[in-house]
Length: 415
Image (cartoon, rainbow, N blue to C red):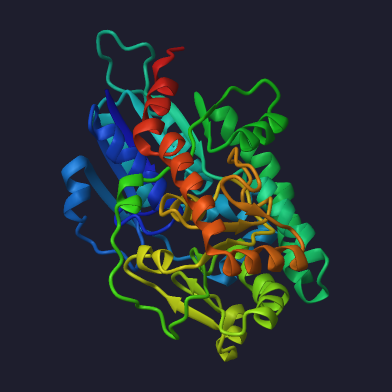
């Protein structure tokens, strides 16, 4: 089978959510199928694909379009389409895609995320060269909806509405929520197959499009790369055994909100009981809203790091205090695969069949969240027990070797 992936960024190195998912699916499929990738190339990505990527697939790239805040504000006024539908609009990419489809037959074209949804139309409009045994005159079109985006914006609106200082953000999210409801439903209808990362996201999409068939293909990780990781000597400064770690891309709005909420409302409660606690925020491009935390000696913003595993390995507790979001959080899988105790909000753990007190601890209020973190800092043996259960859970259900066959099964049905 020949599969063409359309990705919003080069999927290697896999250092954040989208790239982690894309790399896992691409490298897993490449063991049994011929895989090609047409990707946008971000400004901070090397123009020459890395050797591991070239070893598993053919890849062509198009520079990511530059879209300023001025362009975004203009588009909010002159078009009914959501911001995400315009973020990667590129005539060059559409032309390259059309040319590739015209000269080469693919069995499947997989569109990765709603930013790439505009190219569903390009695929639908370009039948593949006819081949004996094909079940349809064009590739099977698969839309992989990484997050239920309309739901994410609805939650962002409701969260920001509670804080007057965030009302401009609430207004933006209200507009995007309403536009995404229409656009996400339309994108699902344009595809032959729709993928979701969790049963919760599948249900949310089916509420938009009654009768929609959605295949759940979860996020995953290479569990061996995490569970067999041997950490180097301590890289954390200031050094302390009471280290809390959050990982994620730090200009992503749900992550920014999570870190600010934790630092303002939870961390002071923890520090009152554990004075030497230190909170490490590990991730690239920290948003300017986080600058206020740089004055706090108990908070460290690392910025970009080559590998998050040394930070996770030295964490006493990993935290996922998310209040906005959709999909599932790969940061949980990474921490659990390394056997680390996790405290998360229920939203932060949404999409995974986890049990409070079995694989992790759940808390939604500042007082409860702080109490659960303190309990793990005081009783590391309890954290070790949670970590062992969490690692076993991830290895059984969320290794790519388990997940990729589910993607192949979604391809297998022929219209």
